[in-house]
Length: 104
Image (cartoon, rainbow, N blue to C red; front, side, top):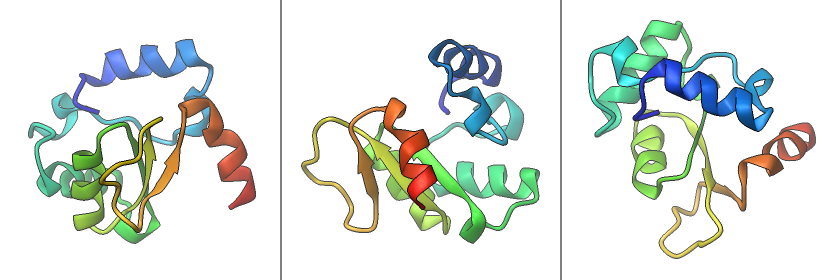
């Protein structure tokens, strides 16, 4: 997330989906702003996760493009779909994520 990790934790807890995420990262934890593939490369390295084993969920087309450039699978949360990368799964809202994951 572009938000600090403690804020992200609060958002996901409030939405009731925190249990779906193994790790949460903000720029405060990897010492780089969320502004390109380097952010994701540092997150994967810090978490000890191969990018090919990661799933990045975001509401920004640009962010899912950066995550894909770093080697991750991606899910875009967006009610609108113009300009969506072909390789990206699109869900209309974060509440759809549990069912989508269950079907994977």
